[in-house]
Amino acid sequence: MADASPATAADIGRIFREESGRSIAALIRVLGDIDLAEDAVQEAFVVALRRWPADGLPPNPGGWITTTARNRAIDRLRRQAREREVIGEAAAIDPPSTIDPTSEEVGPVKDDRLRLIFTCCHPALAPEAQVALTLRLLGGLTTEEVAAGFLVSEGTMAKRLTRAKHRITAARVPYRVPEDHELPQRLPPVLAVVYLIYNAGLTGRDESSALCVEAIRLARLLAELMPDENEVAGLLALVLLIEARRAARTGRDGTVVVLAEQDRSRWDRALIEEGHAIVRRCLRADRPGPYQLQAAIQAVHTDAPTFEATDWSQITALYDQLFQFAPTPVVRLNRAIAVGEVDGPGPALGLVDDLLPELEGYHAFHAARADLLARLGRSAEAAVAFDRAADLAPTEAEREFLRLGGRSSSR
Amino acid sequence: MPHYMLAAHTRADEDQDSMTAEEQRASWERIQTIETEMKSKGAWVFSARLHDPDTATVVRMSNGEVLTTDGPFAESKDHLGGFYLIDSPDLDAAIAWAAKVSEAIGHPIEVRPFAGVAWEPGG
Image (cartoon, rainbow over all chains, first blue to last red; front, top):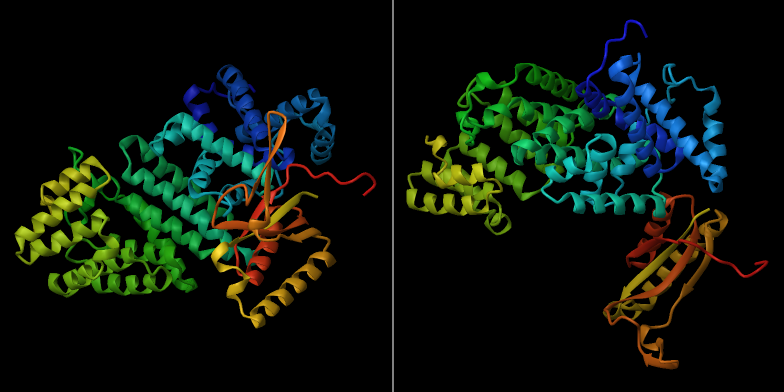
């Protein structure tokens, strides 16, 4: 191609991240084998790394990868004489002899990535296996990157992935998009996996913020592929609105900055507007669910010009609604914190104390309690609660913040 | 089509004895309905109910000698009470059958894919 500009390794890396999920998904459908599909896509990118820097990018890099990978996989199957039936099947779907590797991808009828995510997040797989498969196969993360995001060794993660893939093959987890009537059971684990990936990025070390980016990409993809599912839209709005505030959650020196203290000019306005537009659309559809309600709560927060101007009674009402869908002590805790801003720390402390047996091991419980005690002038009790919260906090930044008595929230 | 085992695991302390005669009959009727449906849809291959684990004999070869011990292989509160061998296109279909059986008998069902199944010649 005369007008093609040479591609750098960085370009190719970006394309891999963006396109490998689609290619792997398409090839799993054609080949019926996850490992074979993965290997073939890897191989195609190796070819791309060799050719593209000199030849330039093809017009449709993703399609080029899929087509090249498919041809490689079919070549490999041909060499393996025993698997003739599989070749017949692959050839029937798309005769390899007629594929022009430079042509645009002969597009799949429906995006195979939707099949892939429902297979990765099949309820028969353990949540950590669902997360690992989703990041590896759809996100195009390396095993090493997935391992780093979840603080396990590369070997452990490799084993986890191998076992999960073996399980899918041996037990024949189907490669299909669930029927509408199955979605109430099948969609929640998919949404949970994406949200879990986001939160792992949010609470992890700096390197893991790539997981936030990946979770948002997955949420966007799901929203694009399932435009009629309000909870999918709700999840996207939720992660966008949390992401909008992510930079402001951390001070210049790496310390935790609580909501009340955040510099709201550092919030990402574009993400907030996008999130708000989705929340408004969900409200109009009027089919609430837990992700939409959490997004609505985030929308109220991000709508307020200052912490004091936050519509806390609206937030309390949204938590009441959320509790109908998710009757968990954590929802009650968050509601109690909102009550503290409406009715004052006294009534809120009563609500928080009710949660003691269930949330004794949860740092945010002790942090909320400490804050309320401090506001009531009960500083000795507050100090004990801050210490307990610090002992339980998951990250060093939070531990430090809580040991200082949550000082940035000295109200 | 692939084969799956639907294994019904029961606990020693909550065996059928804990069911009233009425409950046992209702459970049996639900099972019959499910088996009829399995057969009409071509999913049923084989089913079996086992005697209690204390009727089991474990056999080992030791230096060319047969050693037998009474009782089940693994001492456990849970034991295999019976199983179905079903023919099912994928795990989702197998899980759907398992859900029905579990509901009927009030016990969890382990769904396990067969790696291979052999039949008697000409069978």
